Length: 93
Image (cartoon, rainbow, N blue to C red; front, side, top):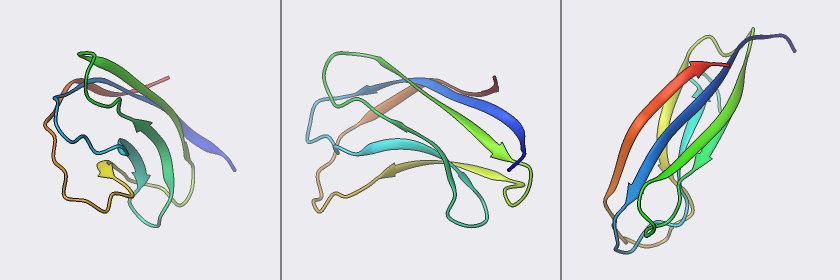
């Protein structure tokens, strides 16, 4: 597989106290298909602002466009929490 772009997703998150979803994360995915290029899990509540980072490689074929998604996987509850995101960036590496 040839890669045409190498990237990095970075940022900071503050999750306020409450019933924090345990599996909250940012994902960079291919727009077509189910290809996850990178996943950056977010730290649980408490402890103030925390950084996150994930490197990714975009293949030269089959992933012409990408999406950035904030996801919460695997929770069977209706728990809520407030999350603040700062300095969200996608850049070349």
